[in-house]
Length: 333
Image 1 (cartoon, rainbow, N blue to C red):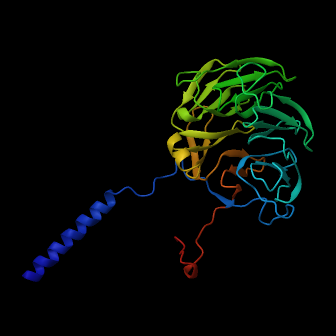
Image 2 (cartoon, rainbow, N blue to C red):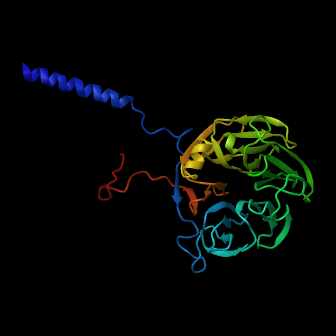
């Protein structure tokens, strides 16, 4: 009888434990479903073809030109600030030593010219593909809020007609619009959390209809405007977005974090890549990645500039099973 009572008690305890375990929250699902990509963790450094002793510092931005060449913008002392590779990661050329106060953003226009934001010296610069300085905006080392100056600008975006926009940025709380020939047209924004106000406009991108998407990072939202700064709407469900990229086919990709506090506390390590439906803001898929900058290539590869000192190259090729018993990982099937 005693044994029967003991067995019953043990069975009930086990059932309760299993019920409690089932109630625990496990791994949180990937919003919109898992994006199935593999990763090359040290693009440009494994295998290493850069000059002897060169390595990346904090990588703030990455982009590709029409030939698939990869341009890396970083903050390290050992290599030139802009380093160019072929699509496989072989070193081609570099430039920029001594030119920048603090590298931040890099974009490449339809003519393959290279544009950067320097949030240390408060400037925007345009280079040829080979590294010749073509034009610059802002007064080096002088922050300001008038049409001739910036205060720690962050990013650039291009309209179809050649006009361009600058998110300005850490010191200011505005977007500045210029004509294709570089003349100041208008600006909008002020500090705050209301429509058209910003707390660190960190990234900017345009869709094919000319709508302007601004990552209002410290307000944990993306704001949407018409080409002249009229507020159209906002998305508040995507967290503290570091960077926005919109493909020529109007496919939106972001590198984001749950909120601005988590982003700063983890120093961008807890990020997620997300694909977003441009019409609705719906999350179509997600996966983990640290990151400060995102660029999606014509070959559907995702390049991430990470403040960890890496360029991550994400590419299709999901594994179907693990490494096997000898490595301690068993296939799921």
